[in-house]
Amino acid sequence: MKMAKQKVLPSESERQKILVEARNLKMARSAHAYVRGSTTRFYEWLEASAQKKLPSGPPVWICGDCHLGNLGPIASTSGAIGIQIRDLDQTVIGNPAHDLVRLGLSLASAARGSDLPGVTTAKMVEQLVEGYELSFSEDVSREEDQDLPSAVHLVLVEAASRTWKQLAKERLEDTRPSIPLGKRFWPITAEEKKAIEKLFEVGHVHGLATMLRSRDDDAPVELLDAAYWMKGCSSLGRLRYAILLGVGSKKDKEYCLADIKEALRAAAPARKNADMPRNFAQRVVTGARNLSPFLGERMLAGKFISRPVAIRN
Image 1 (cartoon, rainbow, N blue to C red):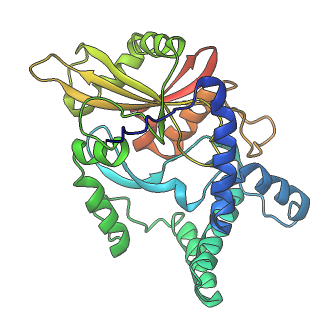
Image 2: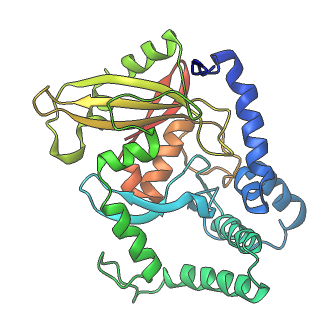
């Protein structure tokens, strides 16, 4: 009888090499994947080729990395669902034209990867510009029940119907209160685990876990499991952890998934003398609260092993 081969998971010293190789492989799969993973190159290209031609809008908070993969359904703490920006690592106060050009490039590369005709690509970009212009109209509805395209409505319905077990199965490959180590989740060091425990002992971070579903503010929060999380594309290589928390007493305990992600200097160019937080993590959280309030209200800036991190539930 053959014994099952035991998984050999990467140690802390091996992570960086594996993550860089994974990022390069992801980017090599398609033109669209390359666009997603090459934020720095995108701005280098803009500076070298189109800086003088690109219109300059008013200095406002921008995503800085506005591509298709960063748009999707997000839930608020009250349970409302909306389509918002899901990744604000590159957010700065800058030129809104940068977001439009990056999203347009993402749409065009996705269309090309799907073998859609050029006229379809042109129509998609045209609709992008029209939608952006519509947001400035005084007649645009701000109500949650405004008419939505059928595809967007379907995404929102599916997102709203997800249960914790379904989300756990999708992300953790199991519904038990643990994070199964494997391809996406790697073991952490004793130092990392201690730092995570210490982080969630802080009052305002503790409150991040108790804010959902009307949990009591003083409900006990227990660290059940934690793992290094291999996720994303351009962000591969920075610190990122998946955290599983138990909230409440044994009788009515609920589970909370949290995410700790290292915040770095933005590649997106900020407007000169813009009034932004100097701390990288605080910049990310402030940008999220301005651009994606559903996400921003569930985020906090913190420090993890002397590095700035954004924490979200």
